Length: 291
Image (tube, rainbow, N blue to C red; front, side, top):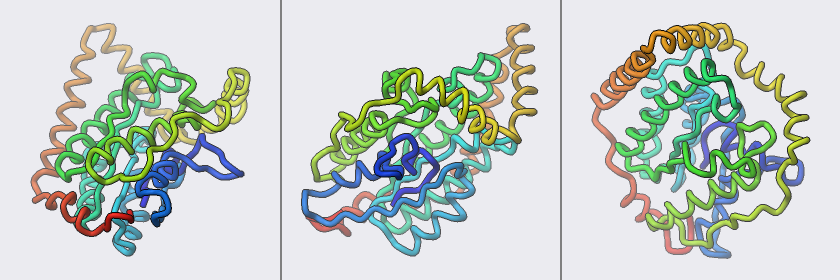
């Protein structure tokens, strides 16, 4: 089962009038050819950690899948209501619920949206700080619950425009394939993927530069506006604060404050007993030819 937002929904990788995405590409390689693999993708565009906890996780508890991916958090950073402690608490509950049933958990950290959109430094800084906070939470909780974790927040793939769709926030087909290939490699190393890895080469050409510029000039503006409606006034305030701190040479204070907030959030989550790691239980539930 795949939980999360538009990234896992497959936005950016259109096939036959629908979104395909990395989760579907990965599912095909979890077991040898001919073996049954069922994918249930519950991810929806715009989902935040609250949606994953309250709307998507109950389905996991009902179905009891072998493998569950949870990739979410970027939309939380784009909201006025962003609170890293709440993000940590929700993810902790989701991870605990998934692994408590013996499923193998698959997670990833992600690039910050400000950098991907090429926003000016004063605007990108606060968003980057938020995404780093979410990534730190995901890193720590992934280790706590024995997840197979993909470090996707940095590296050549982030700056390679051929990996990304016209909106600059979602991978294109090549990018989704890159995610699927990297997830497959990690799962194979853990003994959890026994089929052939997905192909890294796309079946269709990526968006041209004119197409990308056209999207940004038309649909892109509306997309950003819809995602940031409640954030924009606060983001402008955060940007003004960023400029003031840079002028005073005290930007490190903002970073320190964010680090303290993350530490406090993790301390609150770690105060509860962790669920035992799922790897051995998951391996025992699946036969040699199924996933």
